[in-house]
Length: 225
Image 1: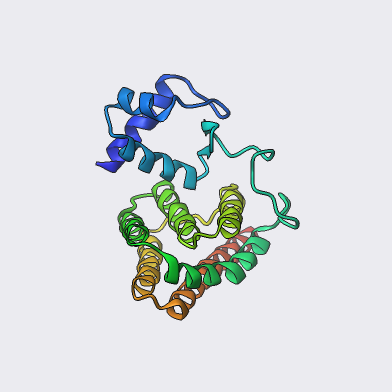
Image 2: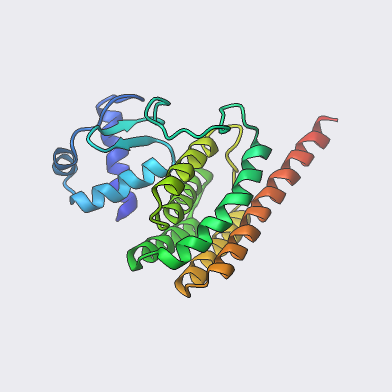
């Protein structure tokens, strides 16, 4: 059902020839136009936001594309020139601690949504679908901390991850299934309120992602020799 709503939303954007920077109609009107509930619409918008395809500002509405720098959370040292290795290193230091804190603060709804993301990741049929739910999964963990400063940093990290030279492509179904299983292990640790286990599972997941990206880079270099 959710994919159908998301497809309808994407069709609406295409039919109205909306482009990056354009505003979507207010939620009530857009929900009426798509014949869906506002709750269903918000879920689809949240998925697009997590994958960097729309941004939302309190009192500003919803806009297509990445959040403009003047509205984006900014932190000293997080620059556009950061390399994929820099971002991977930052995530390895930051996200396990985030998962540990979220394990103690996540609500029941947070955990249900994270489980849904893990299921969607496991069922993803291509890289684009994987990226959509992967970005939402990691952003949700940040939001589950209930800490605005940490959430802002996670938004920055997710925004950096959508850059073409940074995003971790998952073209193989075996890889997607493996990473989805790791996502589920993180959720299981959070459901048990075991912060240390959640941190350990997140670290193992990010190391797996980092190792795979490094292996692919080595393979590409060998092919060029």
